[in-house]
Image 1 (cartoon, rainbow, N blue to C red):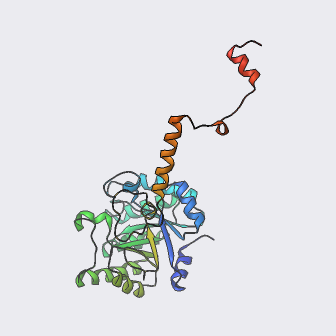
Image 2: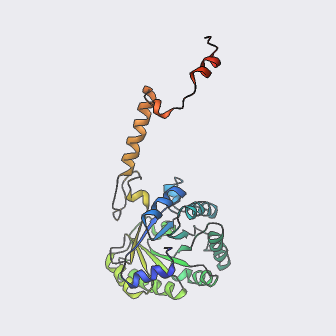
Image 3: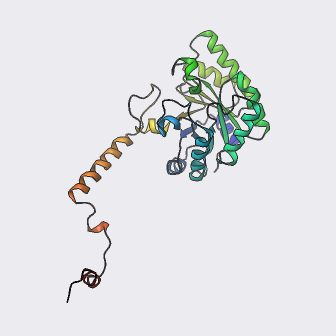
Length: 279
């Protein structure tokens, strides 16, 4: 069954946790969708995990459309959310609506996601009025990395916590269908979740949120270096890949691969004719 805005809302009402993972290509999206994940986020995190950038800021609309289209071809049932990249919605409301529309028309997304609270409510309202569902994003918003001075936990002071609660209510009023809460204290996320009737999706925000999202490369052990504190590694796919690649290299160099079972045959008579051998 196709996951939609309404089914995700019903999950919150039924206290049925929402599952969300990132995907950026057809093959991965098809596997994730087959497993029954409720939602796939085509995150601008692709800038780091797919394109090798230091952060999400260089990601373009063309990048997002390209990867979202691949994911939408691979996933039949998951609710596909596409990130609006840095400076694709901040300059004007008109710009925001046009770019959101591109992610739906050209990318095949079911909803778009943008970062920010009160300052983007006008954009959220206009995008929703254009019949495009919007997922909001509060807390540690990666596109604000230069303002925050790095990837740091947000909402730890009373003033900042109160602002996050206020922003959550404002984006809900503006028409957001869900909100991602990233890098905030678990108890604060719990308060926000209880105050909202729209679902909250946590990433580094504790288990009281209505659902969880992780970057699939992080949770499968495909990224190098240390992962954020909130990442649990559910499998070490990176180790399996390295093992397989090393085995391929060794067998190719030794001549063991390809063995006869991996090759095609032809009549010996034809081979003798081609090689010029006489009967």
